[in-house]
Length: 320
Image 1 (cartoon, rainbow, N blue to C red):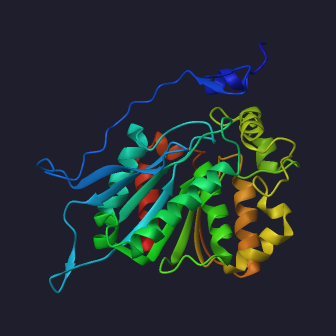
Image 2: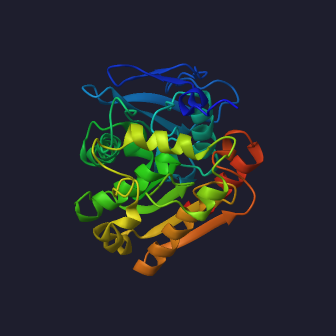
């Protein structure tokens, strides 16, 4: 029996200089641009440079028809989104991410700002958290800039900003929310954080990790490798970036997180950790809505449109 190779599973090659060669190519969708939507198009999108020195950027989505109240343009919630990809893969221009944001923006309706953050191992944590904070500060800047981005300034509600992430993106959303607790980001108000299948870990194996160690999509050796590629050199899996529950300061900050939605599935090796996170948040005084389903696996929304719709339904209910 051949030995399992997590590099082969992930279709990556580690180069001598520490970078990765990624062998999988994902179909890309360009932004529509903000003029002349096509017939039947319900959402438009555009790309904005975040930090040219870091090669980070945003893709912003907005409904073509903005609802109005008393003939005034209704301000829409602003959702800052961090995509999945195990720290090492994907962009917001990937077809799957683009279409997910299209649906999110159109169905809620909302202004969705998808962050194209830097990937590991070329950039290790906390670089991804820094990029997320850059995105939040960019939103804050628009709020007071007379020449700010019109999609944000005209249509965005700065009192209803949500941090939403999936898998490693949920980890980014959580740590970004924790980071800004002691910062003045007014007039921006974080109205809630949405953690879909958060990628968290720890040195000691949980029961669900051991039970699902040979999971087809997300086996333990793959999870181990992703953390090895993402964590700062010289740290272990109980570092707060990976295991927020092992850090007393992080736990104490949780009471100030406000409203949280946590989504998980029973077939995810990380389900025990996700449930422990919810329990800890509740114990610390955060207001948490947990949506756990016994059936399903990590990343199920990528292959099951019905589950993707169900997740969108939970998110819409939480925001609206």
